[in-house]
Each structure stands twice: as structure tokens, then as C-alpha cells.
Image (cartoon, rainbow, N blue to C red; front, side):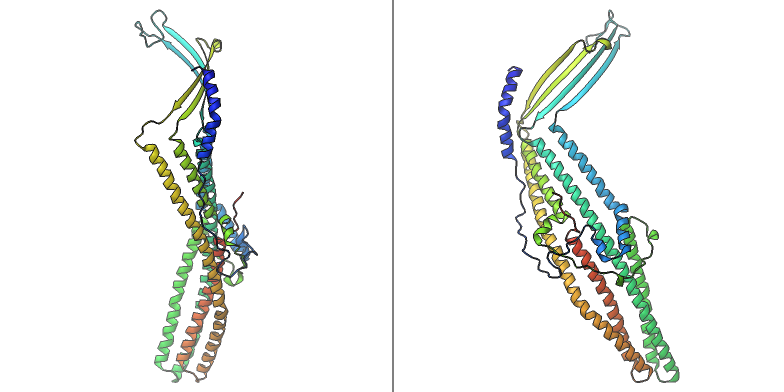
Length: 471
């Protein structure tokens, strides 16, 4: 068949092949999960005050703002995620390159000289012509016609994988900022617990001094003295334990920031100075476009769907067209005096491969099914994260209303018991009991404040931290 006949046949077949390729492209499967109409938790308004991009500003903490900005610049995990995005960008460029013809220019020059003997038929020289010089130039083009959409599917797979890498980076950033906020808040809470423990130690020492005075005057027993000394020792034992936890929280925070703990300055603020904002939870259906991890799972599913098309296209024939434009001469000055062109076409069809291509298609389909289930799981996990955060905020708020009253009454009871014991109208047992109650109530109050702040961080993280899919 002559070249014009081949071109005519190719022109007639192109629309048909394009139609077949379009019809064979599999659609990306949907999750099939119906979002509930509203959240079960009722701790926040459904639409007001949705998280902003820089949601950590809502805690009104300059130190937290500084730490977060430092982490975004200096954290190693985030830098690694950024590098993975650049890798995915390069892979997308590589995957899209075969959609256009590939051009290549070759310039060659050679010189051959016979050193001795008669030469042989593999050489361009002989005894009569011992030296041979040649130059040639060739411009070649190669193009595979994408009948079945395999090349486009390969590019789409790389583009969706690039999207997933970008969403993964946003997930790493959201996780990093949330972890920095959690660690910083925990450090502030431990500092508050240390302050309470030191205060209660001073109270216990004051009572001990009173007991010692009464014991010397004969109005207190040695048993009462031993009991109070035991309480003082218990309070002193709490201090190194809390200091150890506080130091551990600083090490964790410094690691998140990408710095050694020695470079982390002391916090200039107290946990009481922070505020927790009112966070709108939005609608459950909006969560699918507000969480980068869900968007990444969806992008991976789309990439797997494109990979199924790649595997199917590999089972069909491939048509490749080529063209060469060349020239050659024995001297460089006459290189382009004799030029030529060559047109080629090739059809490659799989005949027998022992089921390898079919297995590759089944593998791609199984991977698609796996990622579909992972996508569904990520959606349900996102719903659960929001519900848990809303439930935590609601529960802690209810506890705090009574905890403040408990601390107030426990402080009043301790003051009264201490005064009555000094006047001899109360036993030491009542003083010890009221002091323990006051310490536990104050410590629980600090822990509840931390839990409330951390619940706000958890809700921000569960809602995607103000992130949205760019359309």
C-alpha cells in the first residue's frame, strides 16, 4: 500500500477510533454516601463564623501566631510535602509529553583511516582509499496516535496524582498547625497546673506551721502533725512530675517547629488570657469540599480510574507514525547538498502475553475498588471528626459551668476550715479534706479549660481549617 493510500485510510479511521476511545473511557465512580442534613452536635451555629484560612488568630494569642508562622516556614515535614508536590508536577509533565510529536536532531561526523593491511567489507576504507570522512544530519519525528485514549489517560492519572499531592500538602499543613496549637496549649495548661500546685504547697506549708505551733502548745497531736507533713510531701512530689510533663511538651513543640528545645523561649502569656471562638460547623454536605484529606482521596480515586483506562488501552493495537529528514556528505561544506526524507508507520498489536495485560487491567480495577472504599472511609471519618469535636465542646462547656462553682465553694470551705482550726473549733481532718478538695477542683478547672481550647482546635481541624477546593 502506497503512502497516500495509508494516509487516506488513516483519515477515515480517525473519527471512528476517537469515538471508540471516548466511549471506552470509564467514569470515576462516586462514593454513594449521602450526607446527613445536619450535625447531631449542637455546640455551634450551622453557618455563622465558618473557619477562616488563618483560624489560629481567633484565639487572640500573639505567641501562638508567631509559633504557627515559624512552623509554616521551618517545619521539615511540610518542606518534604512541598518537595513531593514538585515531584508530582514533574511526573505530570513527563506523562503529558507523548501527546505531542517527539522531535530529535542528530548531527554526526566520522573519520576513518586504515592503518595497515587491505581492509575488510566492514570498513569504509581500503588500501586504495585509506581515509574516509563523512558528515550527516537528521531531523526525526515520532508520534503515537492515541486511538484508545491511553496516553490521555496516563496524563490524567498524573494530573490527578498531582492534585492528590497538593491536597496531601494541605493536610500536612493543617495537621502541623493543629499540632502546634495543641502542644502550645498543653504547655500553658501545665504551667497553670504548676502554679496551682505551688499555691497549694504554700497553703499546706502554712497549715503545717499552724499544726507545729499547736503541737508545741499541746493542742495538736503528733498524728495530726504527721498527717500534715505527709500532705506537704505529697504536694512537693507533684511539682517535679508536672515539671517533667511541661518539659516534655516543650520538646514536642520545638520538634514541630523544626528547632531544638534550647531555642524555644518561655511563653509570655497564661492560658487564662486566651479566648475560644464561636465556630460555625456548616452543613455536612459542605465538608466534602472543605477537607483536604477527603479531596486527596477523591483525586486518588480519579487517578485510579484513569489508570484503568491505561490498562485497557494497553490491550489494543498501537499505531506509530515517523518522519525523518536527513542529509549527508563527505565534507561538511557539502552537508546539505544531498538531502532526503523518510516516512514510516508501524502497527503493534499484542497477540500472546500469557495473560499479563489482562492481569494488569484486573490489577488496576482492584486498585480502583480499594481507593473507592478508602474515599468512602475518609468521608465517614470526616463526619465523625466533626461530630466528636462538637460533642467535646458541648460536654466541656456544661462541665465548666459547675466546675467554676465547685472551685469557688472549695476555696471558701478551705478558708473557713483553716480559720476554725486555728481557733480550735475544727479538727485537722476537716482542714486536710478541704485542702485536697480545693487542689483537685483547681487542677480540674485548668484541665477543663485546656480541653475546651483543644476541642476548638479539633473542630477547626475537623472542618478543614478554612481550606476549600479550588475549582
